[in-house]
Amino acid sequence: MIFTKILLVGQTLKGNIPLSWSHKEIECPKFHWVKLPLSGLSWVYTAEIPSNYTMEDLCNKLESNFPDGFLLRGCSSELATYLNEKGCDLIRTGAQGIIDLENSKKLSQTLTNLVKRGDRWGAVKEIPFSQINRQRVSQFITHTSYGTKPKLQYLFNNTFDSHCRCFVFSTPEDKWLGVITVSVLGKHYSHTEMILREKNAPAGVMESLFVSVMNILRDEGFKHFSLGEVPFVSPEAMEENNLRCTVKRSLHESFLFKAGHILRFAYNYRGLFNFKNKFDPEWKPVYICATPKLPFLSLIDLFCETRYLALSRSELISNIKHYSRISASAG
Image (cartoon, rainbow, N blue to C red):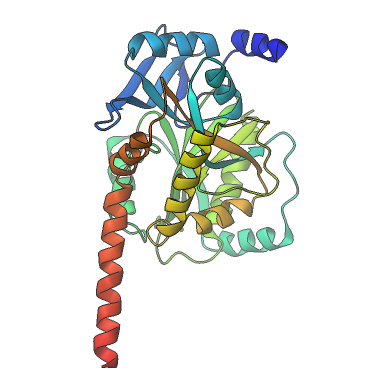
Protein backbone atom coordinates (compact mmCIF):
# COMPACT_ATOMS: atom_id res chain seq x y z
CA MET A 1 0.00 0.00 0.00
CA ILE A 2 2.86 2.41 0.83
CA PHE A 3 4.47 1.77 -2.57
CA THR A 4 1.11 2.32 -4.31
CA LYS A 5 0.59 5.58 -2.49
CA ILE A 6 4.05 6.88 -3.46
CA LEU A 7 3.28 6.14 -7.10
CA LEU A 8 -0.03 7.98 -6.96
CA VAL A 9 1.43 11.06 -5.26
CA GLY A 10 3.88 11.72 -8.08
CA GLN A 11 1.68 10.51 -10.87
CA THR A 12 0.34 13.00 -13.38
CA LEU A 13 -3.42 12.98 -13.76
CA LYS A 14 -3.37 11.90 -17.43
CA GLY A 15 -6.88 10.52 -18.04
CA ASN A 16 -7.73 10.25 -14.34
CA ILE A 17 -9.45 13.59 -13.99
CA PRO A 18 -13.20 13.35 -13.27
CA LEU A 19 -15.50 12.84 -16.23
CA SER A 20 -16.28 15.99 -18.25
CA TRP A 21 -13.17 17.74 -16.91
CA SER A 22 -10.35 18.64 -19.31
CA HIS A 23 -6.61 19.29 -19.43
CA LYS A 24 -5.50 22.67 -20.73
CA GLU A 25 -2.20 24.46 -21.25
CA ILE A 26 -2.88 26.88 -18.40
CA GLU A 27 -1.07 27.96 -15.22
CA CYS A 28 -3.88 27.54 -12.69
CA PRO A 29 -6.99 25.33 -12.65
CA LYS A 30 -10.40 26.80 -13.38
CA PHE A 31 -13.11 25.21 -11.27
CA HIS A 32 -16.82 25.40 -12.06
CA TRP A 33 -18.91 24.58 -9.04
CA VAL A 34 -22.29 24.88 -7.37
CA LYS A 35 -23.01 25.07 -3.63
CA LEU A 36 -25.16 22.17 -2.44
CA PRO A 37 -27.76 23.72 -0.10
CA LEU A 38 -28.49 20.81 2.26
CA SER A 39 -25.01 19.36 2.77
CA GLY A 40 -23.11 22.63 2.40
CA LEU A 41 -20.51 21.02 0.11
CA SER A 42 -19.22 22.64 -3.06
CA TRP A 43 -19.84 20.33 -6.01
CA VAL A 44 -17.08 20.89 -8.58
CA TYR A 45 -18.92 19.55 -11.60
CA THR A 46 -16.32 20.47 -14.23
CA ALA A 47 -12.92 22.12 -14.46
CA GLU A 48 -9.97 22.89 -16.69
CA ILE A 49 -6.76 21.49 -15.19
CA PRO A 50 -3.11 22.29 -16.09
CA SER A 51 -1.65 19.49 -18.18
CA ASN A 52 1.27 18.89 -15.80
CA TYR A 53 -0.87 18.62 -12.65
CA THR A 54 -0.43 15.59 -10.39
CA MET A 55 -3.08 14.07 -8.12
CA GLU A 56 -1.38 15.76 -5.19
CA ASP A 57 -1.50 19.15 -6.94
CA LEU A 58 -5.21 18.75 -7.63
CA CYS A 59 -6.05 17.66 -4.09
CA ASN A 60 -4.07 20.52 -2.53
CA LYS A 61 -5.74 23.08 -4.80
CA LEU A 62 -9.22 21.76 -4.06
CA GLU A 63 -8.56 21.85 -0.32
CA SER A 64 -7.34 25.45 -0.49
CA ASN A 65 -10.18 26.65 -2.75
CA PHE A 66 -12.96 24.82 -0.87
CA PRO A 67 -11.98 24.73 2.83
CA ASP A 68 -15.57 23.90 3.87
CA GLY A 69 -15.60 20.74 1.80
CA PHE A 70 -15.97 19.68 -1.82
CA LEU A 71 -17.62 16.91 -3.81
CA LEU A 72 -16.43 15.38 -7.09
CA ARG A 73 -18.42 13.09 -9.36
CA GLY A 74 -17.15 10.81 -12.11
CA CYS A 75 -13.90 9.82 -10.39
CA SER A 76 -11.87 6.86 -11.65
CA SER A 77 -10.65 4.11 -9.32
CA GLU A 78 -7.16 5.59 -9.37
CA LEU A 79 -8.29 9.07 -8.39
CA ALA A 80 -10.80 7.73 -5.86
CA THR A 81 -8.09 5.58 -4.26
CA TYR A 82 -5.82 8.58 -3.81
CA LEU A 83 -8.58 10.82 -2.46
CA ASN A 84 -9.72 8.06 -0.11
CA GLU A 85 -6.19 7.80 1.29
CA LYS A 86 -6.30 11.57 1.83
CA GLY A 87 -9.45 11.20 3.94
CA CYS A 88 -12.27 11.59 1.42
CA ASP A 89 -15.45 9.54 1.65
CA LEU A 90 -16.52 7.74 -1.51
CA ILE A 91 -19.32 5.68 -3.02
CA ARG A 92 -19.63 4.04 -6.39
CA THR A 93 -22.32 5.46 -8.68
CA GLY A 94 -22.05 3.25 -11.76
CA ALA A 95 -19.59 2.37 -14.50
CA GLN A 96 -18.02 3.90 -17.58
CA GLY A 97 -17.24 1.99 -20.74
CA ILE A 98 -13.77 2.60 -22.18
CA ILE A 99 -12.60 1.60 -25.65
CA ASP A 100 -8.90 0.83 -26.05
CA LEU A 101 -8.37 2.37 -29.47
CA GLU A 102 -4.88 0.88 -29.84
CA ASN A 103 -6.08 -2.65 -29.20
CA SER A 104 -9.73 -2.46 -30.18
CA LYS A 105 -11.54 -5.75 -30.57
CA LYS A 106 -13.15 -6.96 -33.74
CA LEU A 107 -16.74 -5.80 -34.04
CA SER A 108 -19.37 -8.47 -33.47
CA GLN A 109 -21.32 -9.64 -36.49
CA THR A 110 -24.50 -8.13 -35.03
CA LEU A 111 -22.85 -4.72 -34.63
CA THR A 112 -21.25 -4.93 -38.08
CA ASN A 113 -24.65 -5.58 -39.63
CA LEU A 114 -26.18 -2.62 -37.78
CA VAL A 115 -23.38 -0.33 -38.95
CA LYS A 116 -23.96 -1.43 -42.57
CA ARG A 117 -27.67 -0.69 -42.21
CA GLY A 118 -26.92 2.74 -40.84
CA ASP A 119 -24.35 3.55 -43.51
CA ARG A 120 -27.05 3.34 -46.17
CA TRP A 121 -28.67 6.52 -44.89
CA GLY A 122 -25.76 8.92 -45.01
CA ALA A 123 -22.28 9.64 -43.66
CA VAL A 124 -20.51 10.94 -40.57
CA LYS A 125 -18.76 14.30 -40.50
CA GLU A 126 -17.28 16.58 -37.87
CA ILE A 127 -18.70 20.09 -37.70
CA PRO A 128 -16.64 23.02 -36.39
CA PHE A 129 -17.75 25.06 -33.44
CA SER A 130 -19.66 28.20 -34.41
CA GLN A 131 -22.71 29.96 -33.08
CA ILE A 132 -24.73 28.70 -36.05
CA ASN A 133 -23.73 25.10 -35.42
CA ARG A 134 -24.29 25.52 -31.69
CA GLN A 135 -27.84 26.70 -32.37
CA ARG A 136 -28.41 23.86 -34.80
CA VAL A 137 -27.35 21.29 -32.19
CA SER A 138 -29.66 22.93 -29.64
CA GLN A 139 -32.49 22.75 -32.15
CA PHE A 140 -31.68 19.12 -32.90
CA ILE A 141 -32.20 18.24 -29.22
CA THR A 142 -35.87 19.16 -29.58
CA HIS A 143 -36.22 16.42 -32.24
CA THR A 144 -35.03 13.65 -29.91
CA SER A 145 -37.22 11.49 -27.67
CA TYR A 146 -36.20 13.56 -24.64
CA GLY A 147 -36.45 16.91 -26.40
CA THR A 148 -39.48 18.24 -24.52
CA LYS A 149 -38.59 16.76 -21.12
CA PRO A 150 -36.66 18.46 -18.29
CA LYS A 151 -32.95 18.47 -19.11
CA LEU A 152 -30.41 16.97 -16.75
CA GLN A 153 -27.62 19.35 -15.78
CA TYR A 154 -24.07 19.27 -14.36
CA LEU A 155 -23.67 15.55 -15.20
CA PHE A 156 -22.07 16.19 -18.58
CA ASN A 157 -21.56 19.05 -21.00
CA ASN A 158 -25.09 19.33 -22.42
CA THR A 159 -24.27 22.02 -24.99
CA PHE A 160 -21.99 22.24 -28.00
CA ASP A 161 -19.28 24.73 -27.06
CA SER A 162 -15.62 25.41 -27.73
CA HIS A 163 -14.58 22.74 -25.21
CA CYS A 164 -16.13 19.94 -27.30
CA ARG A 165 -15.90 18.38 -30.71
CA CYS A 166 -19.12 17.52 -32.49
CA PHE A 167 -19.80 14.68 -34.93
CA VAL A 168 -23.05 14.25 -36.84
CA PHE A 169 -24.62 11.56 -38.99
CA SER A 170 -26.03 13.44 -41.93
CA THR A 171 -28.12 12.40 -44.94
CA PRO A 172 -27.12 13.54 -48.45
CA GLU A 173 -29.75 16.29 -48.00
CA ASP A 174 -27.90 17.46 -44.83
CA LYS A 175 -30.60 16.23 -42.48
CA TRP A 176 -29.06 15.18 -39.19
CA LEU A 177 -30.08 11.80 -37.79
CA GLY A 178 -27.60 11.57 -34.91
CA VAL A 179 -25.18 13.78 -32.98
CA ILE A 180 -22.51 13.09 -30.40
CA THR A 181 -20.17 15.54 -28.72
CA VAL A 182 -16.74 14.55 -27.44
CA SER A 183 -14.49 16.27 -24.91
CA VAL A 184 -10.73 15.81 -24.68
CA LEU A 185 -9.56 14.88 -21.19
CA GLY A 186 -5.90 14.74 -22.16
CA LYS A 187 -3.52 14.22 -25.08
CA HIS A 188 -4.65 10.63 -25.62
CA TYR A 189 -7.98 10.53 -23.75
CA SER A 190 -11.39 11.43 -25.15
CA HIS A 191 -14.82 11.25 -23.56
CA THR A 192 -18.39 11.15 -24.86
CA GLU A 193 -20.63 13.96 -23.64
CA MET A 194 -23.99 14.20 -25.47
CA ILE A 195 -25.55 11.29 -27.36
CA LEU A 196 -28.47 12.52 -29.45
CA ARG A 197 -30.63 10.46 -31.79
CA GLU A 198 -33.41 11.85 -33.97
CA LYS A 199 -36.51 10.12 -32.65
CA ASN A 200 -37.36 8.58 -36.05
CA ALA A 201 -33.80 7.76 -37.09
CA PRO A 202 -33.40 4.37 -38.83
CA ALA A 203 -31.76 1.43 -37.07
CA GLY A 204 -27.99 1.42 -37.21
CA VAL A 205 -27.47 5.17 -37.49
CA MET A 206 -26.05 5.63 -33.98
CA GLU A 207 -23.90 2.50 -34.23
CA SER A 208 -22.46 3.82 -37.50
CA LEU A 209 -21.84 7.21 -35.89
CA PHE A 210 -19.95 5.76 -32.92
CA VAL A 211 -17.82 3.39 -34.97
CA SER A 212 -16.89 6.23 -37.35
CA VAL A 213 -15.89 8.49 -34.45
CA MET A 214 -13.80 5.69 -32.92
CA ASN A 215 -11.95 5.30 -36.23
CA ILE A 216 -11.38 9.06 -36.55
CA LEU A 217 -9.98 9.34 -33.03
CA ARG A 218 -7.76 6.29 -33.52
CA ASP A 219 -6.33 7.78 -36.72
CA GLU A 220 -5.60 11.01 -34.82
CA GLY A 221 -3.54 9.17 -32.21
CA PHE A 222 -6.01 8.90 -29.35
CA LYS A 223 -5.52 5.79 -27.20
CA HIS A 224 -8.69 5.74 -25.11
CA PHE A 225 -12.28 6.68 -25.88
CA SER A 226 -14.72 6.74 -22.98
CA LEU A 227 -18.32 6.04 -23.91
CA GLY A 228 -19.32 7.84 -20.73
CA GLU A 229 -20.88 6.75 -17.47
CA VAL A 230 -23.96 4.60 -17.06
CA PRO A 231 -25.30 5.11 -13.52
CA PHE A 232 -26.72 2.39 -11.25
CA VAL A 233 -25.09 -0.54 -13.10
CA SER A 234 -22.56 -3.19 -12.01
CA PRO A 235 -21.29 -5.03 -15.10
CA GLU A 236 -20.19 -8.57 -14.28
CA ALA A 237 -16.70 -8.22 -15.73
CA MET A 238 -15.92 -4.96 -13.92
CA GLU A 239 -13.19 -4.95 -11.32
CA GLU A 240 -13.27 -2.40 -8.51
CA ASN A 241 -9.55 -2.55 -7.72
CA ASN A 242 -10.30 -3.74 -4.19
CA LEU A 243 -11.59 -0.37 -3.04
CA ARG A 244 -13.23 -1.02 0.31
CA CYS A 245 -16.10 1.04 1.72
CA THR A 246 -17.29 1.32 5.28
CA VAL A 247 -20.78 0.18 6.29
CA LYS A 248 -21.99 3.76 6.08
CA ARG A 249 -20.78 4.13 2.51
CA SER A 250 -22.28 0.79 1.57
CA LEU A 251 -25.67 1.94 2.85
CA HIS A 252 -25.36 5.15 0.87
CA GLU A 253 -24.45 3.22 -2.25
CA SER A 254 -27.31 0.76 -1.73
CA PHE A 255 -29.77 3.64 -1.40
CA LEU A 256 -28.45 5.29 -4.55
CA PHE A 257 -28.73 2.15 -6.68
CA LYS A 258 -32.18 1.24 -5.34
CA ALA A 259 -33.45 4.77 -5.97
CA GLY A 260 -32.16 4.61 -9.55
CA HIS A 261 -33.88 1.25 -10.06
CA ILE A 262 -37.20 2.49 -8.68
CA LEU A 263 -37.08 5.60 -10.87
CA ARG A 264 -35.95 3.82 -14.03
CA PHE A 265 -39.23 4.85 -15.68
CA ALA A 266 -37.76 8.37 -15.81
CA TYR A 267 -34.22 7.50 -16.89
CA ASN A 268 -33.64 4.35 -18.93
CA TYR A 269 -30.12 3.59 -17.73
CA ARG A 270 -30.49 -0.08 -18.68
CA GLY A 271 -31.18 0.82 -22.31
CA LEU A 272 -28.16 3.16 -22.26
CA PHE A 273 -25.99 0.37 -20.88
CA ASN A 274 -27.19 -2.11 -23.51
CA PHE A 275 -26.40 0.35 -26.30
CA LYS A 276 -22.87 1.11 -25.06
CA ASN A 277 -22.19 -2.53 -24.29
CA LYS A 278 -22.60 -3.36 -28.00
CA PHE A 279 -19.12 -1.90 -28.54
CA ASP A 280 -17.63 -4.34 -26.01
CA PRO A 281 -15.85 -1.73 -23.88
CA GLU A 282 -13.91 -2.37 -20.71
CA TRP A 283 -16.20 -1.36 -17.86
CA LYS A 284 -14.61 0.52 -14.99
CA PRO A 285 -16.25 1.79 -11.79
CA VAL A 286 -17.07 5.46 -11.30
CA TYR A 287 -17.19 7.14 -7.90
CA ILE A 288 -18.39 10.18 -6.01
CA CYS A 289 -15.73 11.50 -3.63
CA ALA A 290 -16.34 14.10 -0.94
CA THR A 291 -14.56 15.66 2.01
CA PRO A 292 -14.68 16.03 4.97
CA LYS A 293 -17.47 13.44 4.62
CA LEU A 294 -20.20 12.37 2.21
CA PRO A 295 -23.45 12.92 4.11
CA PHE A 296 -26.74 11.39 3.07
CA LEU A 297 -28.06 14.91 2.42
CA SER A 298 -25.50 15.32 -0.36
CA LEU A 299 -27.26 12.56 -2.33
CA ILE A 300 -30.54 14.45 -2.01
CA ASP A 301 -28.71 17.60 -3.11
CA LEU A 302 -27.44 15.84 -6.24
CA PHE A 303 -30.88 14.41 -6.96
CA CYS A 304 -32.30 17.94 -7.02
CA GLU A 305 -29.42 19.89 -8.56
CA THR A 306 -29.03 17.51 -11.51
CA ARG A 307 -32.77 17.97 -12.19
CA TYR A 308 -33.30 14.23 -11.85
CA LEU A 309 -36.14 15.10 -9.46
CA ALA A 310 -37.75 17.36 -12.06
CA LEU A 311 -37.39 14.67 -14.74
CA SER A 312 -38.85 11.97 -12.48
CA ARG A 313 -41.79 14.16 -11.52
CA SER A 314 -42.48 15.05 -15.16
CA GLU A 315 -42.35 11.40 -16.27
CA LEU A 316 -44.57 10.29 -13.38
CA ILE A 317 -47.23 12.87 -14.24
CA SER A 318 -46.99 11.94 -17.92
CA ASN A 319 -47.43 8.24 -17.12
CA ILE A 320 -50.40 8.91 -14.84
CA LYS A 321 -52.11 10.93 -17.59
CA HIS A 322 -51.35 8.23 -20.15
CA TYR A 323 -52.82 5.39 -18.11
CA SER A 324 -55.77 7.55 -17.09
CA ARG A 325 -56.64 8.04 -20.77
CA ILE A 326 -56.32 4.29 -21.37
CA SER A 327 -58.60 3.55 -18.41
CA ALA A 328 -61.12 6.12 -19.58
CA SER A 329 -61.15 4.63 -23.09
CA ALA A 330 -61.57 1.12 -21.74
CA GLY A 331 -64.42 2.24 -19.51
